Image (tube, rainbow, N blue to C red; front, top):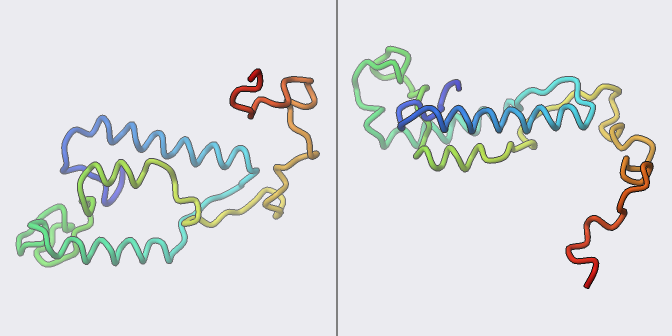
Length: 137
């Protein structure tokens, strides 16, 4: 689950489920859009770190005691606890912020996955108005 996950906020089972859903969403994007590699933008990391450091200053986690939450230091930054409730963590990971990632595409063209301009539905002669809510009315 990594740094800043809600490891001190209750049961880890729902946390693991949320992480799994998040990872699957990223994997689906990678597969569907012919992405070769994904990495987090350094500015996103810097912004999150700044937010976390400010948030943690007003919590008991930052008091002057040695803790694994602070990599065993007395005055170090809190690196192991989510800056907020577990519910905010669930909301934050409900869907990936894809804009916070850099992508390397298979061919260098991010729109390669558009393919030949036709969907499988069209090629196989399926319903072409599936998007209408109530087509019979």
